[in-house]
Length: 145
Image (tube, rainbow, N blue to C red; front, top):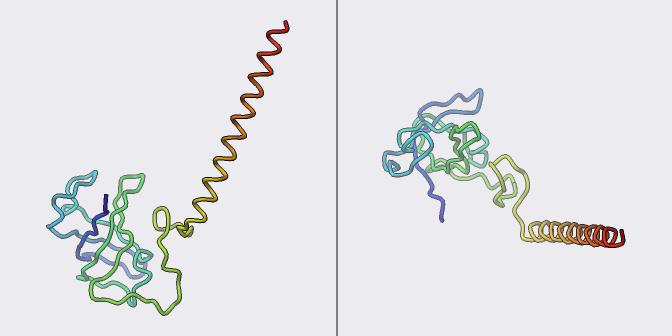
């Protein structure tokens, strides 16, 4: 399932705190959130979701974003960009996608995933062999008594 990029207008922005709220476009009425249609929500956005942009957001900017639902059911904008504003690629930051909620600094890589799967498999095999040895030993002890 492909994640749908939402479009909205920045309706509040506190530049000192680096955060504000987006009102999603009315065309997103079919997208449901925990609190009703996305078009009726105000979505929180932090400057870190726009850190790759050439300028800071301004009231009235059109923002494209994905929604992340936090554990407290609040909606956050992630992986956002400002329509008509170029991304800042001159800073040489790694542009690989990240795992998690956007705050994670672990790049997605095939080698890392394969390594983790291998470690999990080794641990499971070790645990299985240990369990098997323990049950066989217990069975032998109970048979000799």
